[in-house]
Structure formats: structure tokens, C-alpha cells
Image (cartoon, rainbow, N blue to C red; front, side):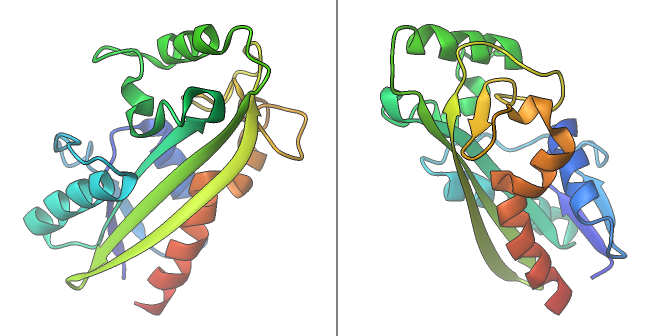
Length: 191
């Protein structure tokens, strides 16, 4: 495989994926570079949403395609925001507004356990492969760090005393996306 389409417009996510595959000779093209819009995420699971995105681009370009859906699941909020993580604060949500909403909902709660989940779908040669990554952590009481994106300023992975936003390069090797990417990378090397 010499080319891979990544079904994303999220530049932070694309940067992480390109960094992860930097040691193998593969050209990575994003949906944004192809001027493709993303199909509406109508699935009720991470897998369904990732499949929607991967199938859409693979069907159109017939190039190996990687898509993911990921989210933050907070124990005290019964798993919310989950698949709605990117639009937790509504259709016009920003990273900041999503974080503010999360902090507001957790105000006064002692249980701040959370888990980042990533489901990746790779379609190549008309075959579909799946990889899942999860990382447990806690939600901080306030923002810390300036790197990363999404909920990174609030998420402190178990075993670390810093938020994802305070450890961008370390995050790229321990995150939920990195766990899934390690599995996908092994698959890609066999194709």
C-alpha cells in the first residue's frame, strides 16, 4: 500500500496519524485535501460512524481508506458525551464550548473517571478491518496545557499527572487513537 485516504477534516487528528505513520513509505491524503465533505454521522455507535465515513470515501476513490470515530465517555454522566463528543455543546460547538459544558456538568461531582474510546475502520482491497483503542483517565477540574485538541486540556490519563494538552508528543504514543493505530499499522504492513 503506497497511499491512504484518511476520512477527516480535523487537522489535529490528521497530524497525529501522519506522525504515527511517518516511518513507513505511505502517502497520506485527508478528505479535506480531496475537498470532500464528511457524510453525516447517523450511526449510534463509534463503529457505525467510522464505517459510514470509510465506505463513503472508499466507494468514491477506490483507494485504501482509514476512518475513525472517537469520543470521551464520562462515568458520572452515564457515558456522555460519547459519540456526540465533537458536538456535545450543539451543532456549532467548539473545543472550548464542549469543555466548558463538560466542566459545568461535572461541577460538584467527586467521580471524574472517564475513558477515551477510538474505533478505526480500514477498508483496502474491498476488505474491512477494525481496531479499537481505549485509555482510562480522569477529568480535571480546570484547563491545563496548550497542546492538542478537543478534551485534551481536561483529560488526565491514569498513571500520569498531566493532561493530554501538557504532553502532546507523549500523547501521540499513549492515546486511544495511538492504541488503535498500532493495530491498524500492523494490518497495513501486511497489505
